[in-house]
Image (cartoon, rainbow, N blue to C red):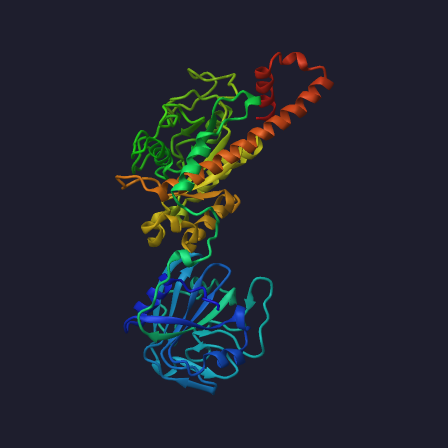
Length: 497
């Protein structure tokens, strides 16, 4: 049985707009399931009482209409409906809640057996489709309806048609739900099919993740003692908080070693490669490298990022916006070792601000990503504050991979920087908590494990390239340039990076 695309949150909003108490929504008709045909629409929806029609398009806009009277297979008859309204729920993937009341209730709904749902005096405020069956074309159904009469029978509140349907009647889905009185049974997010599968979240899985990360060791052939993961991102995105979360997991209590909080300018001003200690006192073979936050006109730029990636910038170096680092700066490492270079980079983004990231900042991050591509350094996205996107996830972080809201944010972040969705890692950092939470720990460690897997891949690629270069060096009698393995590794890094 098809459940439909209308979310619980959307149902809550429609229930509020209808305004006569609790409602249940039962899917009667969906064009992806039943076909886009007036005949089938009327077979499924006639005499079913109040209904809500929902249209979804390829721009992630969601809109439609409600009628409190039953659909009928008539020959073009208007039905008076004081309670009918048009609405929009989303525009271009963003929440856009608007309800448009009827201003001419006598012509609010038009019944015609040769047409699908129609609302308003002809040409209708919303006319969906009519005539013979409409076939799917690619990923959309090209509906032959229109909204050319919008604002005539229903209010428009100054909103134009293009601000509702993007000036297109192409849709990915059209649904009609029966609306009845009664308390809706809200299903748990965990009843949804997860969009990213993992093992069952429990104490055993948490221990496995902890042990796997403790056991991580860089590839010995490159003589690298620890993996360096560089964290970059806008001010306040949660770079320092992610380190604090990982540190808390292994310290067994909430820690705040890295300064974090909210500020207009970055709280982190230096290059700090943090280490994480385990209960035995030993350190993980990982350095989470915190940096100054990215800003439109300040913060890390491409040149400084290049120096960071290549290992030229000394630890605890204080970034100075008025005096950028150069090879002449004190402490500048002109001949960095393979331990100094960055092995994986992570863009840390706040999931609640994806829609308002400035074009300049996005272009800046894309420029940094281009630099990483040139150097073949793997890079991922750490998507923070996902608990603020979804109330169910806020209550139970283990619901994260069942939440369509979080999935949409992952898709959005993927599109912003052009990275695969598998490289977008949602997390919830410790912020207001006083005690550790196993589910927060598991989610953070899943992200860290992915970073380490990417680091391992990078190091393995270095070995392959080093071996290939060594063969070429022998051919070219260049072996004298590298007298030992460490020198060979450095020479390889010079060529590759």
